[in-house]
Image 1 (tube, helix red, strand yellow):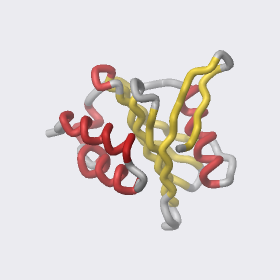
Image 2 (cartoon, one colour):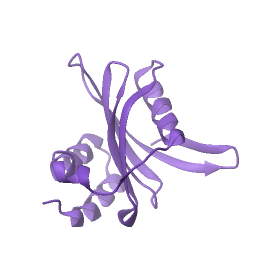
Image 3 (tube, helix red, strand yellow):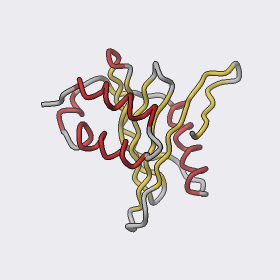
Length: 134
């Protein structure tokens, strides 16, 4: 059973952490490896969010690729978007709190190379959505 009460700790970790691998590990241990999490919320079809993930991946990994096979879910009551995707030869995982305008994106290589993880902020500007890695 998914303990959504752990989202409080995840929020705190996301905001306060300097070790993003610790935040990612907490997310995966608490939610990411629980198949029930995939039954909560509704599928999100947001081309702008996907485009931001592509830009984050491009900046982090130094290559241009498109997001393929995104499975993004939105839990409106928790103001949480989470999911997985492919980015070139990398698999990706993301979670993002809409009310905090902060999230974490992780990219792992299918070839077994090191993972890349970044916290990001997403804000809406008059010209559209923009992100910063932080």
